[in-house]
Length: 113
Image 1 (cartoon, one colour):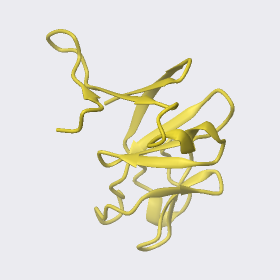
Image 2 (tube, helix red, strand yellow):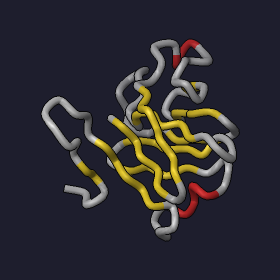
Image 3 (tube, one colour):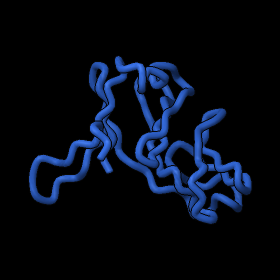
Image 4 (tube, helix red, strand yellow):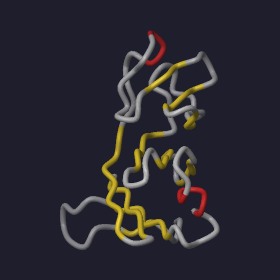
């Protein structure tokens, strides 16, 4: 199990992925427009104060190829495009992507899945 995965604190709590942005493994997220992929979740810094997190699995054909580029999520397999809220931007992305809530404080980014 990834040491960055921290299960919720009680029954029914969601799982939480905690990323310390002061760690070199996640320091790319200190720059707007950059992203990391952790446990099949693509996490992108979309502004100075906001992040977006989506599944790495494309809804078009289930390929695990989604990444972040030019302000949107993209799957190179067939060109599926998605906005930062997971909504499809073309016919290949029409099914959208599963999204995850993020919380940011100090250098700690939490992704709730």
